[in-house]
Each structure stands twice: as C-alpha cells, then as structure tokens.
Image 1 (cartoon, rainbow, N blue to C red):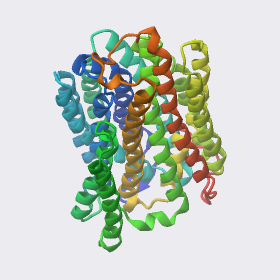
Image 2 (image 1 turned 180 degrees about the vertical axis):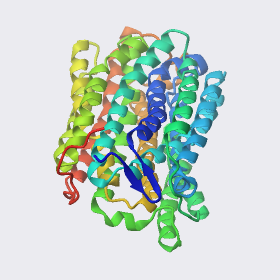
Image 3 (image 1 turned 135 degrees about the vertical axis):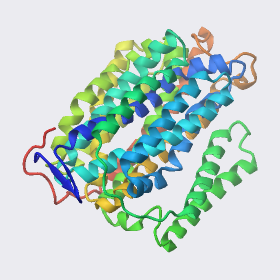
Length: 492
C-alpha cells in the first residue's frame, strides 16, 4: 500500500493508526456483548431470582440491540454530515457513561434501561469504523483493513467471555460494565489524537423514515420476545403483523423521499445486497446461539462462568489469527471462495454443539467444535464486510455502513427475541410446569433429575441459529467476482 492516502482535501500519511484507534472502541462494543452473554445467569440470580422465565433476563441483551439497531441508519448519515470522528466521540462518551450506569443498577428494570442508552452510544460509534475504512483505503486494499476488523471480532470473542467469567466469579457481574470506563477513556484519547477530520457532506434527514422504522422494529421484537409469555395471544400476533406492515410502508417511503435513509441505488450492486442478507443471518445466529449454549454449560454441566468461557478459546484464537490472512487473500480472489466454506463451517459447528449438548459429552469435544467455529468465522466477518463496502462511493460511505450495520443488528435483535421464545417453548415442552414452579433458573448446577430435559431443550434451541446460517450460505453463492482486485499483497 502507498505511504500516504488522499481523500478529498485530506492527506493522511498512513491510514492504519486511525483505524487502530477506532478499533479500540469497536473492540469494547464487541466485548460488552459477549461479556453479557456469559453473565446472564448471574444477572438473573441477582436481579430476577424468583421466576423461571428466561425471557426476562434476555431483555438485557434485546434492549441494547434494539436501541443499537434503530438509529444506525441515521447515525451513518450523521457521520457523513458532521464527520465520523465527531460522531464517534459523542457515541463513545454515551457508551462509557451508560456502562457506569449499568454497573450501578440495583434492579433488572434499571439495568435494561441503562443497556438501552448504551445501545444508543454503540449505534453512534459502529458505522464510523466502516466509513473510515471506505474513505481511507482504496477498494483493492480494503480486505486487509477488514482483516483487522475480523481479527478484532475474533479476539473479542475470547476476551469477552473470559473476562466476563473472571469478573462474575470475582468482584461480581457489575464489573463487566465498570471495566468499560477505563477502556472508554483510552479509546477517547486515541481517537482525538490519531483519527483525522474528514470532509463532510450535507445531508437532510428522513425523520418520517426514522419514526416508521423504529416503530416497526419495536413491534416485531416485542411481539417475538413476549409472545410465549402471553401464550401467543391474538394481540401479540397483531403487533408482529403491524410491524411487518410498517416495514413495507418504510420501503415505500424510501422510494419517494428526496434523500432516503436507505439509498435504494446501493442495492443495485449485487454484492452489497447479498452481503446484507449474509450478515443478517450471521447476526441472527451468533447472537442467538450464545444464550442456550451458556445456560447449558453453566446450569446443566455445572461450569462456572470462567470455565464456560474457556471452552471458547479455540474459536477466538483461530478466528483472530486467521482473519488477517483471510482479509489479504480476499483482496485478490473471489469472495465466495472464503464465504461459502466459512459460513458452512460455522453452521456445522452449531449443529455439532446441538447434537452433543448432554451430560455425557467430554469437555474436549466442545473444544474441537469451538476450533471448527473459529476457522469458519475467519472466513465470515471480514469477507462479508469487505464485499459489502468495496464499491461504496465516499459520499455514501456513512449510508452504506449504516445499512450494513443495521442489517447485522436487526438480525441480532430478531435472533435474540426468537431464541428467547424458542428456549421457553422447548423448556415448557421438555419440563412441563417449569415456568410456574417455585424458585427459578439462577446460578449453580440444576438438580440431576432434570438435567437431561433441560439439556435437550437447549440443544433443540441451537438448531435455529444453525439453520439460519445455511440461508446465508445459499445467499453468498450468488455473489460476483469483483473487478477491482489487488495485484499485490497489502500489509499494515
């Protein structure tokens, strides 16, 4: 790669320090999500110990994902209008402050509210990372940059669960949020010093589109999340149908708006469209699979959060090590050569988890499955993001990044809601009367006599994310080989 990059009137000697600075904040967002997955049983035991409904504690994740997903379309445009650096810094302050609030929460309701604010901060931050890559790196070198992005995701999958386990077992669940405060301060200083100010582009904001899309997502997610709790009453189905109708209205509004939140012209690029389908299935699957898996490991197998997280080390290490190599290879080859086997391996690994989730499976089996998943993830995160933004023009960098991250997060929101409903449904089927029994699913190993039924319910729930990824495999087969591939390796 050349020693300097020029974008508009801005000349940057090297784009990598700016990317590294933004990666710190992006890393914190990813770690925060995985930390909470590990801490869910402890949070439930501390703040909601008297019920057996797992969907209550899942709202700690769903509230975050909802407020993360809804604003992404407009926060990407905010980066174009006011500069990705400024918007990123505002989001970082909100995210860090909300993390402190999360740790100080003394009720499940307060924690859910704090997580909702935290999601808003994350929504301001996330699109700016991809926008900077689009602005600073030429198309033929974006694979290497996204390789760093993918490696960050891989390392976060290790650090998050491991740190979460150590913190939950040590000072307590609140510290999974307190730890964000010093990291947020470091990320703020790094961004102020290392991230350049980019030329801005004037944009108007589609307020009706924001309102309609927010209402649609809320109705759908709330309906899915609470459906089983209310026995899928008619008004629940009415909410879901109303949400789908509003999504259709949103699309129609975008066709008639002078400057839409979702520029439909971006979808004329087949790879952008297909990458969005792929990342939706990835968001759905990765978010939803961790919930039943962690409940199984901790409640059915009796592992503490730290040891449950240690089983994910092969996945995180292999993904982190292989992602940069996958990114450089992607700069010179057809994305399908990485994406099809990558997504397929992750799907297979989830199926294997589902098949082996019982009290008799040796722990080393889960380490092997974790490693298979890590190899697959190296060909999944970075290649999807690179393929989506390879042809984005700078003036639409924020919009494209916002759309891509919205698609991913909407997939995560729906996955979180769907897995909560499915888990509760399977628990009701395998353990009739569990939801009305005194006590609750908290922390510590379950009584031996109900472990097989509980394990079966969690294993059956895992089939949903595994199947969703197969949809992604089929989708990426329709990608095209890019014409602007690099002819030589690109290095940081």
